Length: 275
Image (tube, rainbow, N blue to C red):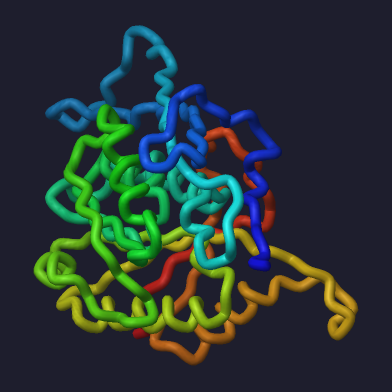
């Protein structure tokens, strides 16, 4: 019998929505409320700070996501995970700084949650494997949240184990400003394939690319180590050390927009080609 896993977030906050699933009646719909970050100070034509005469009312939004609640390990992309919420927070706080005429590429986009947030700022290419109804679920969630989607979201298959770059990505590789990914480090073979895929994307681009990765380190106690260790994340770091990629961990002190536990095990890092 296949071992089933369930994301921790469902027991931490009440995300349940009365909305009905569109893809499969056995799935659930969750609501993720967020607050828009405060607007950055504006300058007038002389370079002086524009002082607002009245305090702006806090704006809120709600993203609704259809997903599975329990899956086998190979279908965890059809669930919601903390790393996606952390990456969405980072996008909401930094998206205005991205060039508007560029693409954001998401690897392992799962249910499409982070790409929906990214589309508020730039056109998005959202990718994942073509397994069961994963891509259909991704596309359905983009349509469900159409009011937040300010730029086109193109979905396509990208399998880390095959490493064939889809035609649409190849044609637009030099228009991609950043690459993003969340919660793709949970299986050593997948991690190895992910690193090779990122290297390949970086190498075929004519300009430097940066990938922002959000992941939660998952600790287990082992008799061999007599300690709690995060084996999947540690494998990731070991493989990076002998790869073409440079790793930099980033602070996660930016404002929290979504409701979730920003636990100390959450990591946001930046990957680029080594100098």
